Length: 249
Image (cartoon, rainbow, N blue to C red; front, side, top):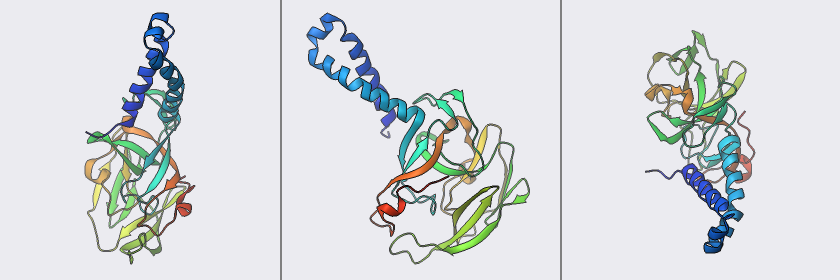
């Protein structure tokens, strides 16, 4: 079973909160004075951290290269939890609705096949869209998404270029993707169901995404990634200062 920090944080907050309340009873305070004092001190801190992580901003680490060149292995990102509405921690149940994901948004979500795992991908298709993927080109409702060559791919110190960087323009959103020159992939057509989103990794030929397991239900979406706040990868040619502060919007 994967370690779930949110569950631990919620449990610790509730436990210290209950003890802090009980500490106002003289009998409990006299019997458990050390625990009582500690809980009253730590509860406000845990409560603030829980609220920030659950409803405002939460940090995540990028463990794989599926979003290269936008996100690199070793990036630590910040995610706006309130962007698509306010949800309860752990259950992810929607409390207050906000805006809906738009084309090009980079979202963090619970993997549809295992909600204990979080994925990060780019939104390509909205509910009702017809998506066609033909020879590495995307068509949305029969309209081709423009591509233009930018450069050869080089991410790590020993990488001599396994692919090419391509600029993709999705309506008003322009971003870079990585295309493997030696991998032709499979062509397909798909209609995005209601209340779901079609997502792809920017490392287009090396990403486990909607092409393989289907759309992301709206209920699975955690928030929108918007910034790299830290970076650590000794195998990368990029330094800490190259990546910190990079905007994803």
